[in-house]
Length: 225
Image (cartoon, rainbow, N blue to C red; front, side):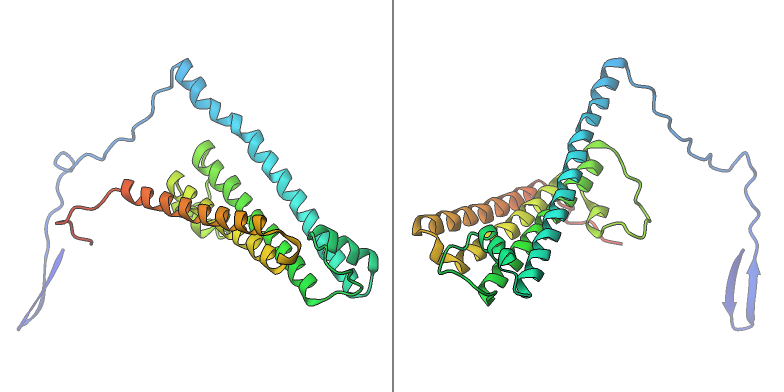
């Protein structure tokens, strides 16, 4: 039915429905044929990566325990525990003048170490979730309220760029920790860490540029609807 407007008012026009014989047939669902034994074995070999991702989950749990322990030692040192303070100065590599109380430099170095653990944990999550989704099997998270935003458009190229960016962030934290505690490092170590960080930056830029070159470009006369 169509509705038309004119000066005299509104009138309707009915169109008869097409008979069943003239209607367009609905597309049939394509059923994939079963794989032959050898391709099926090769395709199923992707599940060999499952123990690797489970191992990364165990490493994630170790990082959580390490984070909680370091945070606990920081709280104890804030309340005057000398044993906790000695543990913190040893863990962050501080070897300057003897420290008898928690100061700003020690707190900053410990907090940067905690941020480092969090960023490495985020990197593990990206590798575990994104790698499993990309290389092993679908997780069926479409429409889930807790689905990460980056997982909705993840593929091998996007995952490489995100991992490179995360590694640069971790390298930046390490470099900042080194510069804050520069008195305990030689010039050779400072120059080496700076050069490594610059190498990470250039590598990430090269990966992103290569991904941009390989991405399909839309035709010039195509219109976006």
